[in-house]
Image (cartoon, rainbow, N blue to C red; front, side, top):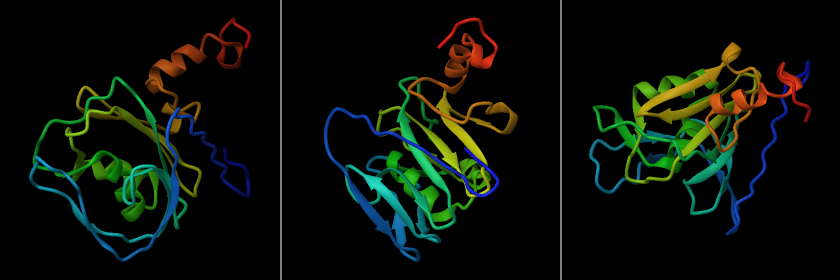
Length: 185
């Protein structure tokens, strides 16, 4: 949500198990992807500091915000199929979130990173991502049929993700009068 003075982001965390912790991630640290079976792993230096919510350990966040105001969050998406092995550097699933917070300052930076880094297929858990920045730009990022699918700008009439693909969620919402349908919420 964006108004004249601020960008507001909201999220819930409704897993049935576990607890989590908040991590302060400093800038100027050298990092590498924790990937067991694939080669060509990603290495990088954190350009920006961030605060993240983690459940499984430092460097493996479920989401967070960096000092430039970039937010990256995840939700489950069972239809996810990550890209096949190619010549891009590889990174583990949750480290992709930390990588984006470490090196990106805008939604466009995150989307452009798909040219140089891909998520490893080692972890079969399907996730998709909601990204927003300090300018109020937002995007959904999904990996469907091995390809990155983004919705932003006019392709993102409602800036949100659920545990369905963005297209499925918008199709469902269009049934209701808030988006032109006949059903009442």
